[in-house]
Amino acid sequence: MYNHPVPPPLFLEGMCLVFGLIIGSYLNVVIARLPMERSIVHPPSACPGCGAPIRWYDNIPIVSWLALRARCRACHTHRAAERHDRERPADGAT
Ligand SMILES: [Zn+2]
Image (cartoon, rainbow, N blue to C red):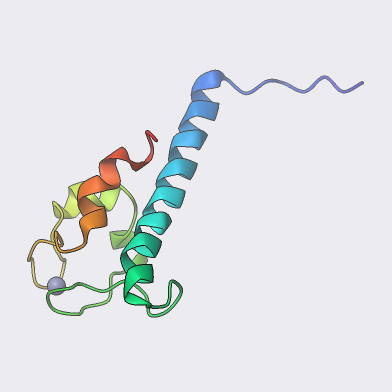
């Protein structure tokens, strides 16, 4: 029999939160694109205002949202046109 150490509950909860944020973020892209019959894979996300591609480091749930204050890095306009941005902080809690 193996005697595996049990990860602390806080670590597991943190992993569940991160996993939930990633899945929630992706599902919001799916929800936004499917009604418009757009691909959910390509093209990558872009600013609805200026069309600048959103870099991977600007697309980290909550972290990037807070760092950029929900604004585009290129044109500094609100990315509020993407409805999923407003819901992003709650994704991991669902
Ligand atoms: Zn922009």
